[in-house]
Figure 1 (cartoon, rainbow, N blue to C red):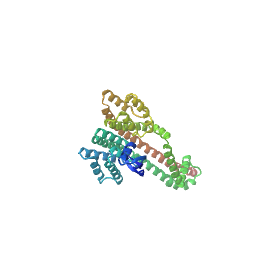
Figure 2 (cartoon, one colour):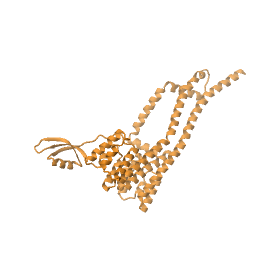
Figure 3 (cartoon, one colour):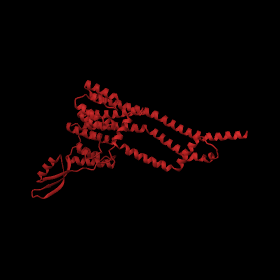
Figure 4 (spheres, rainbow, N blue to C red):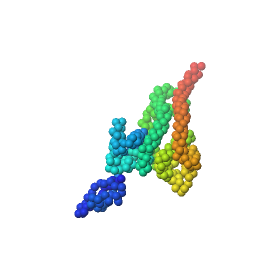
Length: 400
């Protein structure tokens, strides 16, 4: 249902304004007529969208609790009331769930109530619940959504935790170089001034050191400016499209990203298809979960081809950015009539492949960072020691 702000007149011609929920303007007109009111104009009330999405693991908890309670024979209103009373909920989440409960009590469906919360709930979950309400499979769908978002959160956490050590090494490298350039090297400056000629590497090192020590605020300022510029630049659709395309083609990293994108799409498509949604709806919803504009931009052609009667495998084969394993699984599923099973199998395999690819990338990244740090430190040591040894050689030659 939609909330409308209306202007109407009663039987004696008096103007009446107010708000009322209805399916559409025709339904609104009918409801007002029952109260002897005649609609003049109506505007849909746009609810203020929740700015922050609920985290995947919290969405999974919500769906899991809902599925278990409904499976136990508890009514939807009572189930939501129990979920709202959970002491582990954050206040923002509790407010959202309370508002969902409030909308349900007015006669609104669960999917519509979730939609009213703006960006709080994922569009995929809303569409799945809408389909479940029509087929009477809300319990099974809620449990399926709990499993889906649990897996999504676990994969996200694995990626994040795998990159923790390289991030620490990167920060350590910056700190070490900053200390060497800003504090250690200036200690040798008086000594180097007494020397007639310095090696080129030492001159370069002193120049960098003086800049870091005296103009460090410019480094921070330029860093902030470049960050803002890049953020604004990548917010332009055309630029983001190019960036996302490059991400799929980078050596090593590109392969990992393709696997992650394919795994994400396959899991979403499998969940939607298993819920009984039409294949066009499945493709439309699954496309928006990939998080790569370059791949998403190719789905208009895919959807048109499938609508024209082309096999799903043939349509997906044209996507640049997916791994071939997905298409192979879809072909087998179409030939054997087990597309839902093959999609689930492909999603499981691709998620495993993505975990292995992440581990491989991290294993490659760590020694590269260490090697780069060793190179920087080695360059500094050589640049410092070289003129000192040169001065010793000069003194020794003069002594002879």
